[in-house]
Length: 492
Image 1 (cartoon, rainbow, N blue to C red):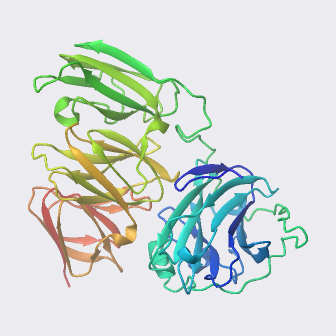
Image 2: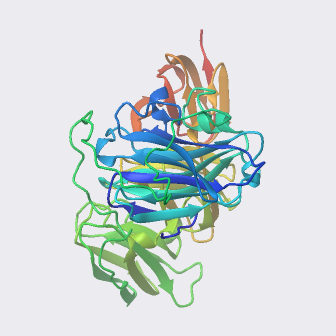
Image 3: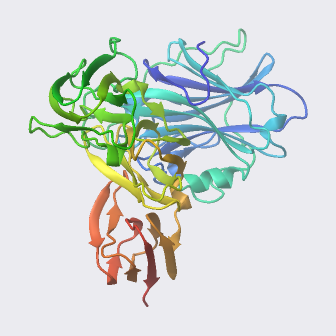
């Protein structure tokens, strides 16, 4: 059984998948209940039926079932089954959760989750640690990636118990039990040798929409041939043709000024072939003398750069998979490309106290789209939408001088402040408008402060306003792209 660490992921190649939640059988320890939670593209359940428990009938689609529990030797086990062919297209992730009562997971010995194929072939095992104070856990998740399925070891704990887990994913309060519920015996377990019997494949449930797009390999995440870094070097002005070693996939372009550098050193590059390549322009005033950018975001084969410099320089092309993971947060200096795997979220951005520097953060989508998260024009933290496409991932670009420190932190959507009577702030923010929407008096201290509605993947939707005054705001999440102070006051 291949063991994986927290945060790691692995492909699930042969369904249906059998998921086992197991722990050491020891008297006096808290009881544990396993559950499957089906989530849409924004990490929310659609209704109560998307929570599959031992006492329930299984998901209406027939694609997810709780098979019950049993004692196997020195273990207490519960098993769930996922038939990927029957999962509705609107479901992007399936969380595997564990809930306990009358104690915390610190008193539960040997907790682990493992995934096997329908024929019993082991695919992944994650042994849980560091959950001493938690009473609810997301052990792992099955999620879609380019038309295929993968499993990620999550290990996210909740000291607030099942209700806190429920709040993160739009589950009705108390829909997750605080204690295990009775369920059917696990008839699929052979009691003589205590080995799970293979699960026969079932006829897939009819899809709720059209067929999924053909699988497209996730850039730099395995499955392709390795390739060496491509390096271009020069001195002073010049031109260079940058060739994509793997056409159709993006790459990381590292740039660096060489030799002694001072405030009179310059190093600028621009596309000169007239083709579209978002953000592939760098110069000292904005990006510093070294950093990273995403190249071939549209999957092209080559482009030409014109270099304007009074120093030596180096360009290095790396696989997109070498981008540092954002995960729950990251920090660094200068222009940097990060990789984010996860649901749409809020992204808190904080930069150092350099008064003369600007900092902007963008998401770069798998279809080549580029969307701003936030502009931090001071050291005050700001928050913007971390948009993630249907594939469940994006690249994040931090643009700033190489002397400027920054810090990013991902936050769940339910942490967005709610517009009830009045909200005010400074800099970018995402706010939640409840009910049927609101009519609000919008005020700000800058010439333009656009407000945009946000779509299901947190991609920008309709521009709601730019000028001060009374405007109608729709229900849902709204992003305030402010660089100064602003306020929203609901009008009766």
